Amino acid sequence: MVRALFFDLGNVLVPFDYGRFYRRLEPHSSFAAEEIASRFAASGLPARYETGAISTAEFYEGSCRVLGLEMPFASFAEAWSSIFDTTANFDAGFFRGLASRYILVLLSNTNELHFEFISRQFPWVRLFHRLALSFRVGEKKPGPAIYHAAVRMAGVPPGDAFYTDDIAEYVDAARSLGINHSIIFTSPSHLIAELAAAGIRVAGASDAPQNGK
Image (cartoon, rainbow, N blue to C red; front, top):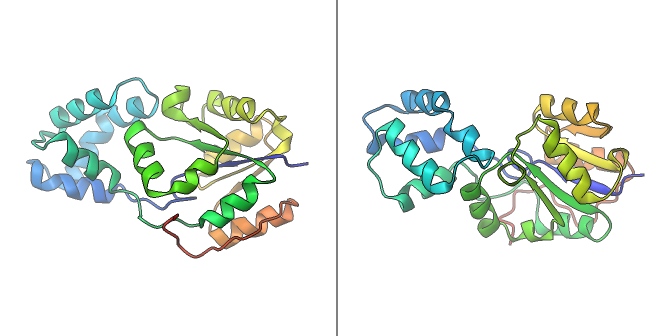
């Protein structure tokens, strides 16, 4: 019986596009967006930041150095979080209805600045009972530690958890650890159908984009 629901964040609950970040940096760098993206990935800074290996200040300073940026921290932080849509795939009623009957866990590869933005933009984040976030756990999906952390936080056996993610590799990793009710996210309506198929009642749900208010 499903007792806990594990949700990925990016491109499941909130759509995002890193291209927006790279384009926002272009006026502050001597590199084009494509070169910014290449240099940023090669630097290893995003992965280190998402696992909590470096602080927000270190991430900002390292990014400025690698990308030749001249921009204040506030502008950089705003550009960094511009990757996210300002509307979510589900409304607050979706999470409120589920939170009254299941343990909700946010299971996400994310970082401090992004999570601060999401928390401000979408108050429904507060309806999640537990947060298994890579920058707090110290490991990213598909590493096992972050899944074990989510299961431990939920306080249920892996077989009693339902998990959805838009990346097949991450879903496969969850299944290999006994989180058998794991499905690939393709659309809000598909997820609602998969929840229903698993015997999970969804009350007050809307699959129209919402600002989370």
